Image (tube, rainbow, N blue to C red):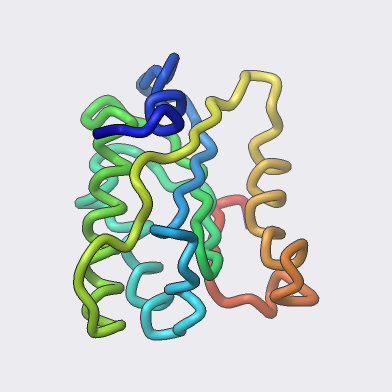
Length: 152
């Protein structure tokens, strides 16, 4: 059964081709699975896997110990929830192998924010990749290994 919070995340969600979204997905129970570098590296390659994205484009991402931020521009082949579903499923399978575990890795659902036309996507990408600095995990963006953006 879905929790009220899960339903609230989906309420009003729309999926528009060519729309850019800032997405946040957390691990189950906010467990820091990606503090393990093997698990972190195993999932990072999935974030830009063209087979999972279809004709969507990953514009920026950062993997934190217990969550991930993605900035994705949808294409027309897959709606938003299917892109997220693919990324979550394949990255979870890879991380579970790296961690020698089974079971759910990601929490249900995701948070999304559709970018407005007046949003500066470079600024949003910088905000996303600076997340480790704000969390005290690195002193400079370049010191943190789990991120990428098309804007550099």
